[in-house]
Image (cartoon, rainbow, N blue to C red; front, top):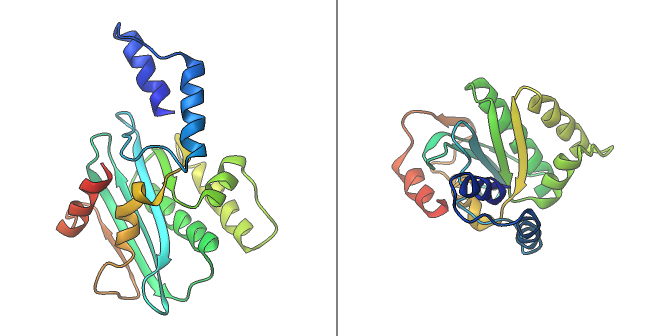
Length: 196
């Protein structure tokens, strides 16, 4: 999607533009090869939310997210660590809901949401709500998503989601949520340079 936008800008600025058909083919190739390129910034006024969930220890789980602006700077990050792990897709859905609620609470209205669980991203794009536990979370995610002026869903490979993935293990592991808005820890900023 961003390549289409960048191509439009090149055309408008009198540079050579790639045809829509070529754009579509390259986007399809990127998805077929496991997700789009990492570090593709959103346009000004749109923020990118990366989320991930996983095991934070033997018994603990971690939900984490990072929101960046169009320059790649982290403007909000958070982690919630707790007991128990109920399966990858379900935990990813729970984390996505957690992240979107924090985004709404902090006043974000235009988001590109990226996650590394392709099955969840595909369900969100299709607005598919299965009759299972994950269906309840998807319903809630889609309801919260109506709070945004603009929202899109994108699959990104783990390599393009490394900051969010690394925050799972943020030390010390404690069973509470931590949100960073103005004072982002240096360790998170250092990791962020790998994704941009």
